[in-house]
Image 1 (cartoon, rainbow, N blue to C red):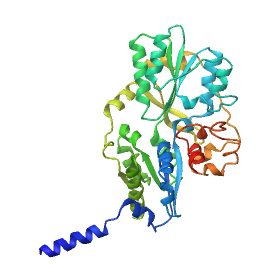
Image 2 (image 1 turned 135 degrees about the horizontal axis):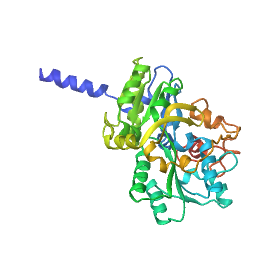
Image 3 (image 1 turned 120 degrees about the vertical axis):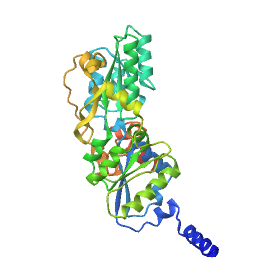
Image 4 (image 1 turned 180 degrees about the vertical axis):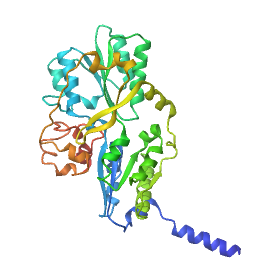
Length: 357
């Protein structure tokens, strides 16, 4: 009996495969996996994971870069505040070079606009506190991961009785984007940091709509494991969800962050670059916090942005083409002279293709 148990354990050990072996030896049907997160895109390139994939496994980049999905009209709004209203714009650095309809924030700065780069919304609120003679607006972009920090900055501004601080919101939520893109990929590689806030219940519920996905971390081992699990589950032929980042992501997520955002913000229709307006996919300050809403505070007119027709960022974000399929990629459009947002951001798909391939 003891010999039989030992022999069985030996057979199980022999049959066990590493994530790399599963990926390299995949011989199932063609599968399109969308890595939603821009950090995933860059890490997969940097680690050389794409070179391990058999030809029937295609990785496509999705709308997980907050700068990339921010529409041209948002840049135009920021430029309007800076040039027409004399507002000091506090922003993350990668938004400065994103092209608007006529110019970028960098171009506006050349025309005298006060553009101040910060590392967090808290820095922007502090800047407003230290410069009471300036009207300060923070460009609040991002998904569930960064929205709580913007809320905290507004709460701090109220506590400090600041009347010179506001935020211009372009905050977005991911579940509605997954539904809008469910025909663009067979499996989603969900961003671990977003799910750390939201939990996994929403992704689990999406399987009932035929949407499959795995939550992935950011190390080589975590990414390889998530891809291997996706390939194994895909061959079973039915929708699935697996949390491959359990050390950080739980089913309920961060209740504190969720309560904070729900207290201060509400859902609204929102434009995504390349995807158009997705209902209830944006976040705006609730009425009781509208003194800090830049659009209301400065009575901003409706601004319609016009993207450069040569840019195919919208198609890239929908998985309709690869960055290298764009005619201006690497020629008229480079990280130094970007035509579209996907070439600007450190999480952008075009910048990843340009840098690594």
